[in-house]
Image (cartoon, rainbow, N blue to C red):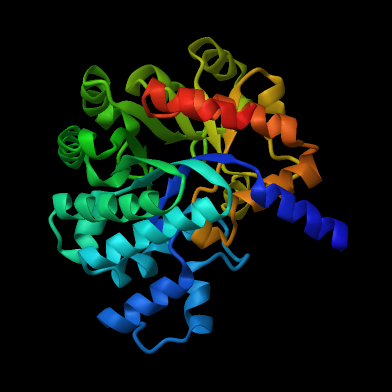
Length: 340
């Protein structure tokens, strides 16, 4: 017990990179409760115990879509710019306190507009201020990624692209395609992501999670993705594995999330080790730490216990993550010595 605690404390202190963290999925449960009590709504009088099963995994989720349903309770709690500023600052501080020194926060200005009634630029301004407040307090660097919800349609994609271009000076570096894949196919977004690529934005796409390996191929070849959110089903197709190696594409792997969404049936069968052995670059990330009730240190501990990862391997993965990060070369060079 003492040795396990000591190991956890040591991992907690290790410097880390988190490339795949959803702002809306990283909110503290106590903050969700506090916002409902402040802003009103269906759960204004709920206790934390009553709210938790609606915003965190219970173990009864059977699919990615059950997991995503948690956002239906989280998002309505958020109503004002101050709420968003608070969330962005807290999420950044929580990451720093877990050893993260470089963080990429992704979020959907479109969905936050829908829940708050704010203009999308007001949403971005609030996130930017919250992040900067945290960065003024502690040594962490944060960049932003805008999510295009796949169900929202190409018109929203065009809007998010322009919003990203308008806010590059504020740390918005990339576009992501994510969300419910059942209604609008990835091919509908080819033009939007080609424009993003031509404009020099970074591109990451959720693929190879609920969708098969073919979605990873489409993301890389048709949407210009240099990183893939999750992507673990790439292991099902050797041609996709070869493509990832040839294009030097990095997979943003989120192990606990994959287990909770049933994308991976068990930690024993999770393919992260096989992907590394196949020569694919991967990083270890949190995904939605508030919903999953985890930290990045928890992910490291899980992989050490179950997949025989060690400090040296994590450092190598973090160096790869930093090389694939959506930030400038000067920032990368400044951070590389942290992961020697």
